[in-house]
Image (cartoon, rainbow over all chains, first blue to last red; front, top):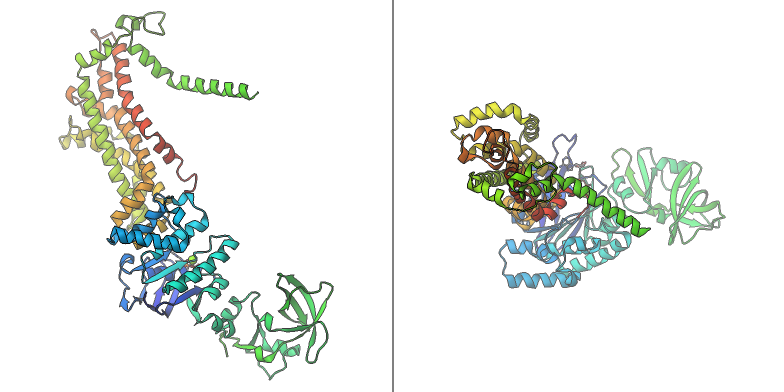
Length: 344
Length: 276
Ligand SMILES: Nc1ncnc2c1ncn2[C@@H]1O[C@H](COP(=O)(O)OP(=O)(O)O)[C@@H](O)[C@H]1O
Ligand SMILES: [Mg+2]
């Protein structure tokens, strides 16, 4: 287990118009679970591959456990990598797949066997050890890929969207198991995902990436409640945060507090909008344009004097209602610079 | 109804098998006939007195053992050379960042477009200059050169289909390039390598034109040329029984080889059709 430090990493692919990674720096502490979160194509995989040594950065440095490994080949970095499509050796048994890394490092057969059993126990692979990958289900393959990563007790485990090939039910369950597993191992992990739920539920800290730049680094609560800019504000949360020119909301008299110029954006999470079926003090009336029930809540699209936003209604919204009363509480309002998108 | 369908199916298969194997079976029958019966009119469909005399004759009156030995040496060496060089070259072309690699592959394929007939004269001069006429190497090297483009092309297609992630997983597990090639890529590519190897073997075993021109001495000849040079007592007599015996004998190794690798070949030909 060790710390992983990424310093000023830049990367531009040949023929690429702009850098895929632009001055990326962050540190994963010893034993910490960090997610790299961002939309597809933002450079997450490239960054993970650079940490692993599968790809070389144009400039910048990587250090693992205090040692600079920028020019070290992958096998000498003592890291494990879980590939998105698992990349198990199809011609080898599960047991051999798991043991490969240890064997090549000259581990004693007794130790190898002990580690295989340990990994098999942790991941419930006991029954599968003598099978080949072709005879496994997607979830089982995923566990073998994890097993292969964990047997070596690496300094850090790098995971590239390891759950993305599983169906929804299995993904949910595996996510929970993964969290318990890494909590128990206290292993340093860098986990790439485009799924905000995965990032929120699994991580100690999240690194939010967009267009090759770090948008924010923080705990899941941090990035959710104090988004650094409009990208983070709208990328996290389902439904996403309402972001609107504050002036517009003023004109609709939806927001009561202080004067705002045209250069300020307001942000309000749909669940922070107060709703009521009866008129209450300080509430305005809005037209329900669309009601989207999701079970636990109903997402309402509301319009009032030309100002549109979304809000969450707990449970099922009465289908006959075309109007609802709302209040946008000033204390929950986020403010962003309209030009830069940065938090004010 | 189902039974009738089955019967028709069996019949159809039998017809196809007979149609394809007919000429070969005729050779077998002819090779077992006494010399006099071969040219009898009307022909007999089964030898009246089956005999192995013609098999004995090709070894006693002709150096047929030498021909076979030459063929085995040439075909095996060509196959081995082609497989090793082809595998390594195809892997390098499909995986390593070679400057100009793309153009190298194209020019290799371009070379393969020339009909070998055009190459006969320049090749002869080359082999002569290298003092390799009547030397097995004088065939092994040209055969390898002629078969490499095809081998490289087939193997490249196969290597490209092997997920890159697998090799990267190997790199993280600690395998060197050579170990990756040997322990991961090669086992997965084995069906393709076996397929190309057999096709190269068949080519080298059957090649006639270069073998005829480059190997002028009887002791250096390979089987196809040897068979063509079989002649009877007089110029006008063709020893069909001996020719048939020779053909049967030289077809057997190929049949045996294909049967031995059949499973692999089928895998190789259908590779990529199903995800593993
Ligand atoms: N080997 C490569 N050559 C050229 N461009 C690449 C290569 N790998 C990735 N890219 C580009 O870099 C960008 C980021 O890719 P990637 O890191 O895979 O994104 P993510 O994993 O976040 O979806 C994409 O636009 C992709 O097309
Ligand atoms: Mg990716």
